[in-house]
Figure 1 (tube, rainbow, N blue to C red):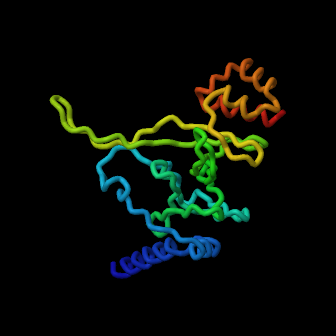
Figure 2 (cartoon, one colour):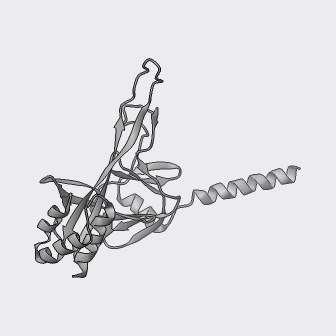
Figure 3 (cartoon, rainbow, N blue to C red):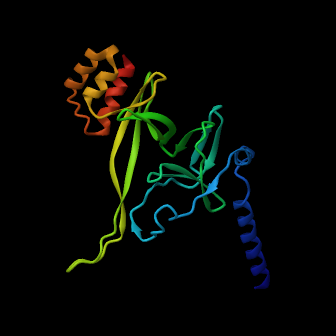
Length: 229
């Protein structure tokens, strides 16, 4: 019995030791070169821990990658995207840290999603944020996720109180032509105005395929067609 207990403790110790090993020398270098600040859960939610829903796009453990500006890829990471704060959070030894917004940290591969932190134009206002790349080419289509925190509701007659809740909002879409700043688009009219070189072909394609741009797939089809011209 004593021998079995010792073997069990050794096994647990080995597993713990393996779990604490650095991911890679490249990751160690990354950690030295950039300042990663610990993310305090709830700190930016007015300390309101009692809420429903989630502000995150979460991905499986060790399934993500960070791509540096020099095209170096650091794989085997656990990253989650905090949509509410529009920030990427990296897990290290059980704790999440905010990935600094620096140009050297160029892109993120989160399972099947590919994100870039970019400068873009929204309603003629230049801003920055994390955009998902949906399709790339001479014209690139981007998607911006949105969530908001609905206020808690007090108890009412015949109604229980409701906690604050994270709810999704409709995504917005942007296109970047060549190396130009991505610009927000809402419909076919916006799209045609930004792609004058193939205006007639695009207008016919949109009409023939009855694209209403109420669904993401319509944006993807239209940009894929433009890139094929």
